[in-house]
Image 1 (cartoon, rainbow, N blue to C red):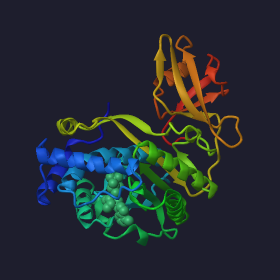
Image 2 (cartoon, rainbow, N blue to C red):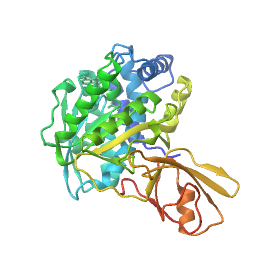
Image 3 (tube, helix red, strand yellow):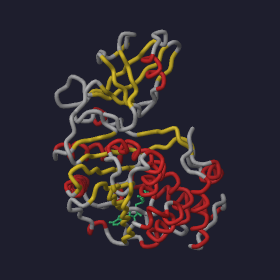
Image 4 (cartoon, rainbow, N blue to C red):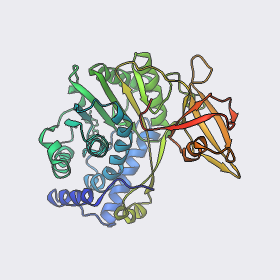
Length: 384
Ligand SMILES: C[S@@+](CC[C@H](N)C(=O)[O-])C[C@H]1O[C@@H](n2cnc3c(N)ncnc32)[C@H](O)[C@@H]1O
């Protein structure tokens, strides 16, 4: 398992916690209790339509968010942003807006991805949240961790309804925020209002701009996100990731299915005692996401995405792959397996594939056994 949060990140969090007079990072009863309460409030959003946006009035909620949820959510934004990196123009100045930024997890994840993968790119960040206390923390963290990015950043304590891009934004990041909006509204009306919001944001992007949406990996929130995907495609927008096709999502057919990530990323060791005490996972990073392009993109066939954990059996490996398929309207979910005795680079690609990997196969095989003649390659993040 990889970890994305390093010691300088944790030191910055600790310094900000001290300055803001928040709880210190230790598995104390107060911090662990607050983490459990915030976690329960987030989970309720996926279970109960009537649940409202978690109250900032929960005691020590900011401490819980800073020490536990922020380091976790930065990783989700980093992972999603990796798919976007190959699409940024060389040397570009990217005007990015983090909506519902909270403590700045997405902005920080994006800044980390740019630092690691596209240092030629400059970020002009705007963070928006109506929670003033959260914005103050986001600003302090960005100043400490990315001083050069923070110098050009804006922090707006205002409601999202005030945000209406007019072709002057290259990237909108909306992480763990859709699930908090329009709560308490009838189900269909809520979906309509969120669709209108997503269309407004996407239409308002610069011509080659992108919208990155991250939601919890809960069944209800992930399925709701895939339903919004269909409406965005119907509105003329394209999907860069995770999907390799623009047809209807085959994972929406069975009510028990939902498309989500489970990356081999763990919290840093310093946070493991706290996660353990709170009874929460510290290994495996789960989320669902969508990268939407305002421009329509060419559809490349002969690719598919692994959407479940690989199945290893003696002498063979099975993969569940979502792909374009033969149906005119809906994508196809197929089970494939390949024998280990077929050697060569195709074997390496097949064996290295994990949930979330995108594979090209040529010629595209029928479901079932993939023979040694099929040439297989694992594509990089965001590669089309
Ligand atoms: C779960 S937090 C997510 C924070 C961050 N994006 C992340 O992924 O960690 C949701 C944030 O959205 C903000 N939010 C919810 N509804 C909002 C609204 N109508 N206007 C502005 N901010 C809002 C909340 O204050 C909260 O900070």
